[in-house]
Structure formats: C-alpha cells, structure tokens
Image (cartoon, rainbow, N blue to C red; front, side, top):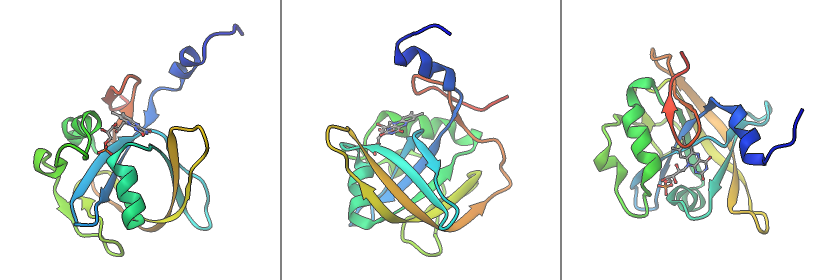
Length: 166
Ligand SMILES: Cc1cc2nc3c(=O)[nH]c(=O)nc-3n(C[C@H](O)[C@H](O)[C@H](O)COP(=O)(O)O)c2cc1C
C-alpha cells in the first residue's frame, strides 16, 4: 500500500450508485436532484439515508414537506438526470425543462417517475445536522416501493459523469 491524498483514493470507488431524489415545495412545485451519497441503512424499518448540501433546493423541500421519493433513473433518462445535477431548483423549474413523466404516489404527495428502474416513497424519519459539516443527513422511512420493466440504471463515474455499467 502507498499513502495518497484522500481524493485520489476515493476515485477507486467508482462506479457508484446514483439516485434521483424527487421533492416538492410547499406550493407543490416538484424538483429533482441526482445524489450519489445515498444508501440503505436498516431493515426495520427500511430506510434510505442521504447526504444533501445545505444550499440545495432538495434540502429546503425535504425540510418543508418531510417527504421525498428515491428513484433509480433508467439509462434512457440520462440527459435529464445530468441536467438536474447542473442546475438548482432555487433558480429553475426543472419540471418544465425535463421530459420526466410524473405519476402519482400512493402515500405521499411527491410524485414518482414513470419508467424509472425503481422508486421508493419515503417519509422523513430524522434530519441530522452536524456542526462544521456542509451536508445534512436525511433519513427516510420507505413507505412504498415500485419497479418498472426498465432494468438498466445509471451510475456515477466521478466528476459528475453518468453512465450505465456495461
Ligand atoms: C452524479 C451526481 C451526484 C451528485 N451527488 C450529490 C450528493 O450526494 N449530495 C449533494 O448534495 N449533491 C450531489 N450532487 C449535486 C446536486 O445534484 C446538484 O448540485 C443539484 O443541482 C442540486 O439541485 P437542487 O438545488 O435543485 O436540489 C450530485 C450531482 C451529480 C451529477
């Protein structure tokens, strides 16, 4: 083994999973953001844990509505997912710019994306703010899960580059 800077060693974790987090503001405006710092953390209850930067619209929306959808986007949705990672819902209405086909969820107000590989409706279980840390940890309890016939999902290859695993 040889010692390197942390950034160099972290490059070895790619490709990593990427999810699209769907949220809504108090007025019902939907927003999407790709998040790679996302994982499951328990079975009882089933949870998703996300690390989201304080300044993102996604953070504001989850705080306000206490709910979100975790979506595995399909390879066909790559352009819209990339776009959602480059701009903030604080400045643009991503629903108007993207071609996602939104469909109703069963237990929460935030919608699902039709033909994504999988979707999970989540209710906020806990928000963790840590001093000096620029990201907020959100833990969501999974209420309902969905799949479609699409199976090829997107991965993060570093530098915010998205692709499938061949
Ligand atoms: C592949 C990829 C992974 C990302 N992962 C994260 C992440 O884990 N946490 C985070 O806060 N931002 C992450 N981002 C950046 C946000 O998606 C991006 O800043 C987005 O514009 C935030 O949108 P919002 O302000 O509408 O919430 C990622 C972007 C890409 C393209």
